[in-house]
Length: 136
Image (cartoon, rainbow, N blue to C red; front, side):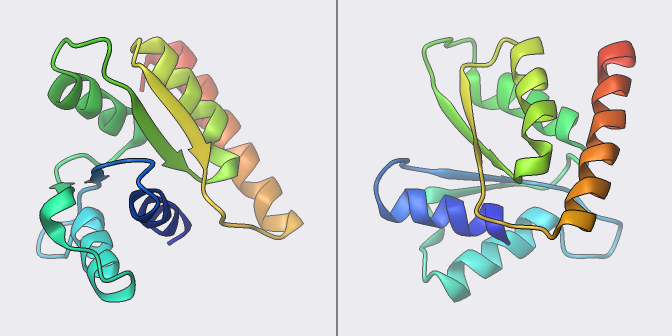
């Protein structure tokens, strides 16, 4: 929920004017993006008028490509802020650079203990290597 809370904070403080939620689901389940929308509405009392939901992507790579293809619309001057958890920032930054997306990548306020942080950093490092070699 750290990423969602950070997005709500930026929207409330008028740093951004819209939130784009991404994330698909398994068939018959509520998508990650739809769950995030419900959370924003109930916990932060945000109106859906400034929130867009995309629920077909399931990986970070697909989500960055979605932003590039569907939100940038060829306008390189559009600036995006992508929020992720700290352990995931390097991989997101590499994808943003690879797709030449005009985006700032910032960290959520979500904190992990050392053991979980180490685990997720190793996992994300492997993901980054796979991205570098295979573009996945």
